[in-house]
Image (tube, rainbow, N blue to C red; front, side, top):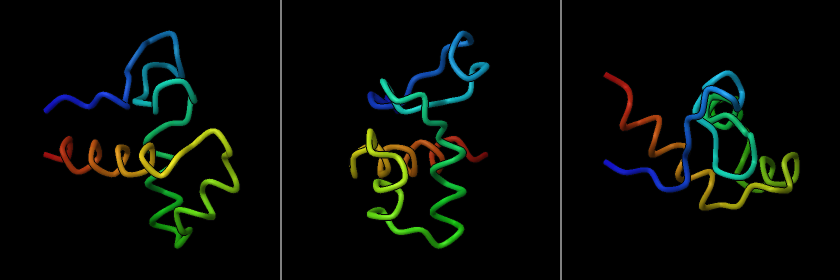
Length: 66
């Protein structure tokens, strides 16, 4: 599956998957969701994120879990 909002580049965050244009790791978004933060909470904490970025991170995580 193609994840257009997620990028992996060894020069950005040591190659961790991040949302394009934000340098925000997918892992961090998932940890914040798991910790009980709402989408609004995450967007308040990271103003460059959009709801679509957060959904894309969740989709990417779900698709990459073996």
